[in-house]
Amino acid sequence: MQKTQTNRLNKELQDFNERQKKGEDSGISILLVDQNITHWKGFINGPSDTPYANGYFQVDIVIPPEYPYKPPKMKFDTRIWHPNISSQTGAICLDILKDEWSPALSIRTALLSLQALLCDPQPDSPQDAVVANQYKTQKDLFVKTAKEWTQNYASKNKQEEKVQNLVNLGFEVGIVREALLRFGYDEEQAANFLLGG
Image (tube, rainbow, N blue to C red; front, side):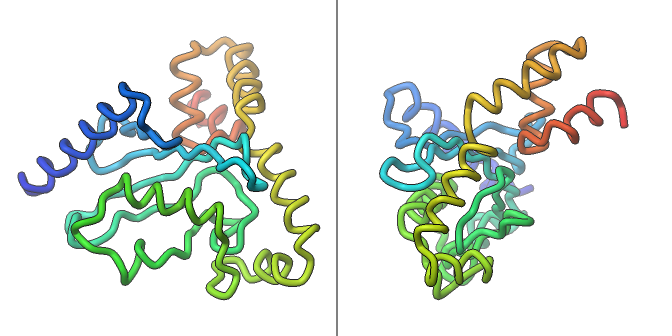
């Protein structure tokens, strides 16, 4: 990794931390994975007045060696029902994460763009054709399904329940939270990791 990239990433981390201390985080936050400056987890609060309200969504962020000249690789770890996000893999269809990326953008602006995408789905440029079709032809069912997925996969209460389930197996809270973060709150994968499998 080049020194200029390290400096840039450290500055972005510092900006996130300062905004968070001031309460100016706009409903997004980040954590480093294993103290690795090129692997982050982003967190997005579901915007109010959307089917994603009260959800807490985790995004995996891998920063390529060419950053900031190439975009970070992002995908949702938290399952979500959205036309521009794969309901299976979490892959994202967003122009700034592909050909519209500019070195003037940052990981913060990319997360804010994802948050905006939750407010304004673009079904004519889908990542998930099934969800996009439902959005276009059965909007009420789309909203109902998106709310159910938010409740089932992105609810903070459900996440705390998963923490408690693994703590009840005899693991320390801090280690459990790290394992759940690593695996997008997939309880089974986190348990296997904790058990050495």
